Length: 415
Image (cartoon, rainbow, N blue to C red; front, side, top):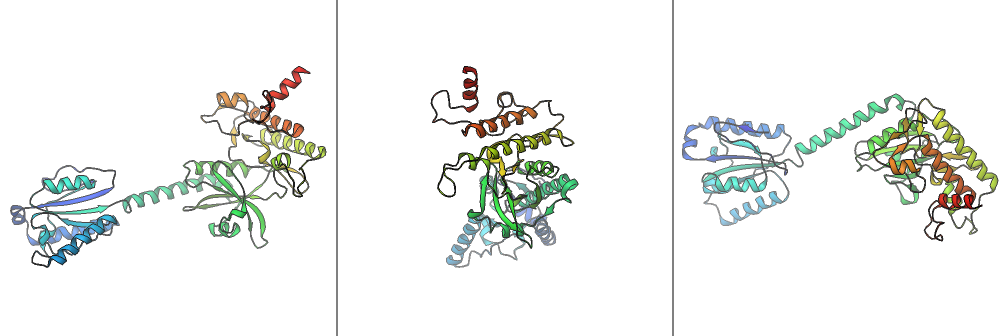
């Protein structure tokens, strides 16, 4: 951005986001411009500054015949303004210290308006004529903030358009309702956490219905895309073995939230691998429950791959993403990594491999190929956990037994 009159040089841009305006003052330039033009220019500059939304602070400089104390106070005021990134008026050399608010020489019709850094500003004032008036405005909290807010609102508008086909079928919660439901995201309400999210237990509505609230990391650049994908996929799924999505919350400042039905029985991982149960005894699942879990999750996966209009690949099937209801009905949850595919058995390449080590299919882990087989492999690992009670990777095991899949394969081949 630049504003020029007469023989001004080109404007410069700096990463600091500062606008500098300096007006070289000489006897010849002062003679060329009338008092009317000076006042008009000053008015124009003031209007331009306010049009940018930048409050301009102009310290009251004293004349040379003022006391030394006043001049000292002026220096302190200027230093304070510099420190706090305000806009300031510098009169560094020559007759600059004699400027007053009524002095017509404080603003000139011959000036340069450009972006520059503070170092560049010092060079300008050092190399300019004997008297120079420099106006510097910090844009860090001005145009840049406005631009950031505008970009943020554009992202929100784009997100709203993307989810509009399904938004009406869900409950839209306000951020205040989310805060109230989670008791301001109390640590005691945390149910779990993922790489880019936290899950809180909360109560919403007049009936205080218990829900699970997933809060996505607002600092992550991919959170909006992940939120949109998960909302679109989860809202389209309706199966007794899949946790239903109830609603969502979009707040420009605080981030994105997904509200799921709460499943009270805990995760399959806790039931399988917690060393002690609620009464201090080892936690075990009867074989009838293990069979029920295996059958229910198999039906959920079959529904994802073949029971919807578009094949859905979950990509993160594991015991911690399988919840048990009060009657031990299994429910698949967390569709943060889920994606649509054109057809169940047609693989496609992913640029980034995401999931949990130990449950990743070899073709996905090594080559990034995703298909329905990605979920089938992960489900197979879960079956081995249900049967053996072992985790997929355990470094404390004897050599050759650390990897559950390889160990089971060795046992089968050696029998």
